[in-house]
Length: 73
Image (cartoon, rainbow, N blue to C red; front, side, top):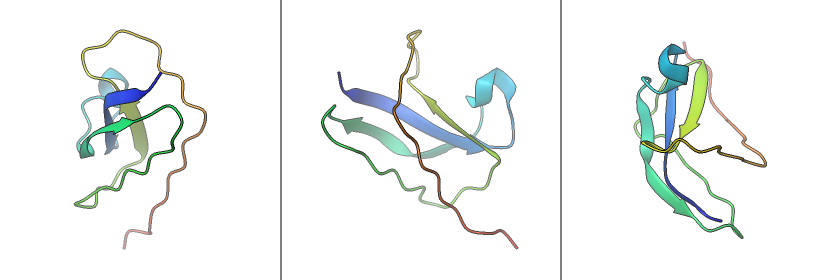
């Protein structure tokens, strides 16, 4: 199965499981045999990173997520 139409949200709120935080980047399509890289442009600041498929009520299983950032002055 491939990952299609997902959103990455980054922010400081846990309201609605973080789905109210600002969206990072755009919706992506990643085939099941490939890895994906999502870059936030413009840069966003937040404590929580949420991966969601809008409108779907299904379980989302991801093998690995790596989050990189820089310090905020």
